[in-house]
Length: 141
Image (tube, rainbow, N blue to C red):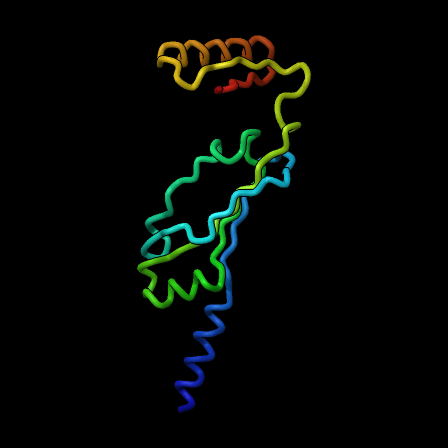
């Protein structure tokens, strides 16, 4: 009986620890947040969840991405013996002022441009950056 109680207490304590990772880009965060509470991964996270296309949710870029395993995510993982390993993903968008600063160069590129036009735009950005020793931003629209 004592062994079962210790095992139960150990299991409960293990499930209360929540995993959390945070990545910041250095851009100023806005109030715009996209959250996916049950991002599906498998085999204890060895097979990660599908990628989230931030351009669909954040028009000004991403300020911060957080991943974590909530208590309920860990319960689901424990019940399935880590075969199903859901996690919570939160994307915080950048503010509209997080774009290009005054004096910095930028080039526009249409999203549906041909590979040749894309390559020429990238080459032009590299040449400008090499000459000016400043960053050159490519705005894909």
